[in-house]
Length: 457
Image 1 (spheres, rainbow, N blue to C red):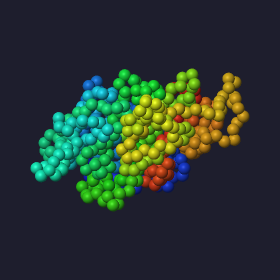
Image 2: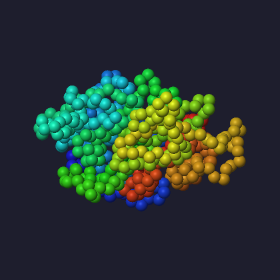
Image 3: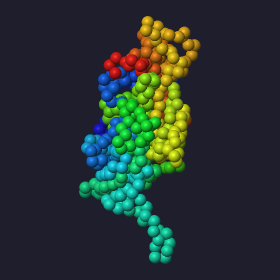
Image 4: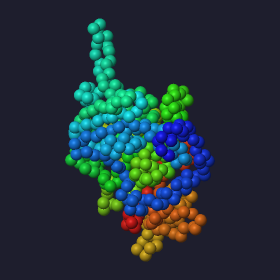
């Protein structure tokens, strides 16, 4: 549907879900044909997983605040604001992931195509300037000695000028300590953040590729780095903004819960999936078991752009938190203060950078003769998770990693080579829904391939 047609039908954001009552796993089946075409075993998915960075040799980026529509797995279409990459000249949600090195001078030029003034703030970055002036409240005293606050161009920047060139402002700062940060609206923040004006800024340790910090114990495999930008949407609020109506904050109720701008099962689709043109970032984690001969960690960057704590809960393994809000967890003497946790409680505006691996602790493996090396266990977590993931479609019919048994003819088979799948989701279970329909929302999968890998990967 074209943008013009959507504007002629502004009620599109009020569509009720097509799948209002789904059995466990049925939400996955609704998208199974599309995912099967780009299942993680395919060449396309293998080259379109993980963190997708916008980089620049001069650390200069141009963003445009614009509007468009995002899709939800239940058939809804929601009017949204976001920051678009000016070079791409297309709306996307969330904003581009900007990746720079610590200590580098950064320039971000903002254009505005929205119907009201907007701006960007960069929490965690110091000495940010907007058009050369401090882009933060300036505290002073008046002639009587009373405290006053003067706002600079942070708020007035990038005004939408009717019939004229859109507003523009240039932000400059020096990238701070390594970590993951939000960039977001600094104007009418409650409304503009909810409408989608936010993105991720990733600061890497200069000269230490493949580390979350400058510490060797934060090392990870750059091919297995992921971003989980967590947020929520109240479609009725978005509809009110689309219709130029007053926002009813007393009636605020989030109905969709997102990872990287998508809800489950769209979170499983690869980056730049063609059926999600405005939501470019996937959230499936794709790894191999821990190998003592090559003990390489995997990394996930958690970032909360929502209104409350999200208790995110990955099945299958703990994760070791090494930075919080861009600060390495270490003592005054440099001692390691990182910690392992099974349920990560990510607060609004907070980031947690973690490393982790998945280990086959029980040693249920296949021997050289192709047979299990142990007696078949009566119960292992992998079986439980595979059945949760979607009525057997992702389960190899074998409890052994790397072994695939005959699959019933009445199911769609999404298991490529006996790999495991573990669920990762918000443990506030109402957030694992799409407008109340279970097994959706803030949820994704961790895929664990057998040590030898999968054909085609």
